[in-house]
Image (cartoon, rainbow, N blue to C red; front, side, top):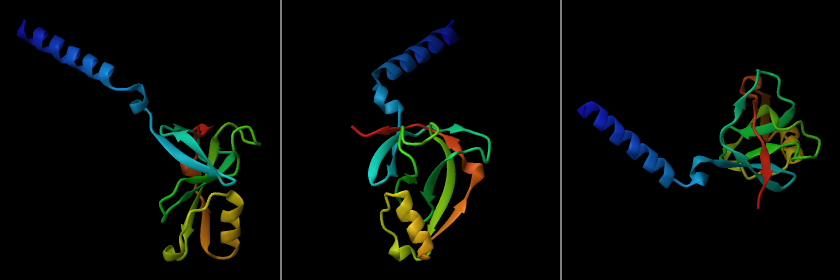
Length: 131
């Protein structure tokens, strides 16, 4: 009897805690840049089979910034099935915010950034306009 009472009290406390937590707190957002504009993304990506991503997205390995994607929603993308590329600044002291896929490619061409495809990191995750 006492065990049931304790279990009921614990469950009631968990329900009360869940009800008191705002719904927005259940989501995390990150930033993805496309052509100089920032977009938000859900922090819970879905796994896809390695190498099956179709929309290029760049993640930086040695500089803290959001990802840089080639496509924004509705502009040539395949629904956020991301093909992950890893960018590394060759001289970390030169690192700065980059918000355009073409700018990243220019920095690769200039020898400032190394870019490597990481098919095991491919994922699906929508991006949404800010605002």
